Image (cartoon, rainbow over all chains, first blue to last red; front, side, top):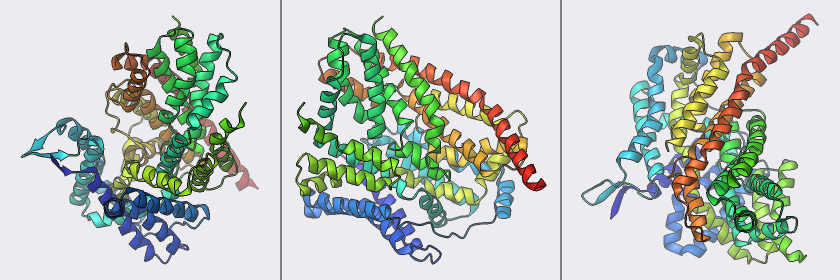
Length: 328
Length: 239
């Protein structure tokens, strides 16, 4: 069965938007490193526009190798500080205030359309097909729905302000430049996770931890599992990556089998102990570093610093909750 | 101990040291990946393949690029200004109260599976942060950048914490399904996803209590920051 809006088309749309921004960057004489900045975003956009084509024409191994080289180039450009921020024709503060007064709370409508349309499409278009064609990609329903939400929002914004979709893309360059290299970090971390899986890093962690564990001390086992989840999540940037490693290495053999703990609360709270780690690491880039860039904070680590007190207190709370619940 | 079990761990100190010395994170991650792959004897071509495959397969992480155009457009037509004016007109709105309300809504919606209501690009930058700043400027007048940054960082933190410790209650959320699959794979078959969601509730309540306690103290903290700043300003003028 075919699909009207597939996830691949959404990737092409991202690629097209990024390429438009590349063109604008090339023409931006005010950007001191416009050529390398444009090259960085061109390589990033090319992955979205051309990787399906590469896979279908060259086969997976060759296509993946080429993208692998592209990824290394991207990290070299960023690593040698060759990215910079452009100059933008912006409406003045007076003009913005005048528009704000003119539109009143209507200005919120397009922004609120994004989540509302996304949720409605996710609920209403699940499994919906017309004439044998699914309207939205069923495997990535929320993403497809989010894309519909963004398009509705752009159209509503166009109608409200008279600023065209192209104008909207032009305005977005300011935001993407502010995010900069952090835009690519989440995908880079997924990549590192893939290498760790291939290298069986998890097994090594398990063996090393096994050397220090006293299997009779229940409280200590709980502390090691929770703190281990948080620490390994901080390194991997993702609790999902830490979960199988720590749970198979510590929770399963020592706490469930060895101490007959109740498995459901044990592993659920274990995952949530990992989330405490997510709050405290720059590796969770899309939660901690991208927002700092989006909000134009001078200190890229300020979001993390604000989250650390809650993260640590909640980790302690999780240890106590786990100890009293799983051995009740 | 066989030292070869340590080789796959080489990426971990590289990541930690790379961040400590403030090298560019993209470079740090790439070097850690290369070092780990080569240390365990992966062929360089295969390593490149792993890089490319994972990078392509995680393209969905970049969908927020789609949100930027509309946010950029609305901002150029006064979205932030309107958000600030609107909040300033409410006498009872303080920065901390707005954050508390947002935290509760975000956690409740997350628990119902509506995690896409909210988010850093779609709500924090265009709406929440300007409102929180607006409430503070309505109270104290124009504020210096470091106090604004603190309010913005708190806005981002609220969104993260509320959604992390709300969404696990919802059964169809990825983490619950991942845990369920892991348990079944390891021969523990008497656990239903419903139980997993229920056991996320105590932590959700703890997260709510801990963060609310911090937010209750935030307004007083901002007041202190503003006083300290005004004092140092006055000193500069006097000097």
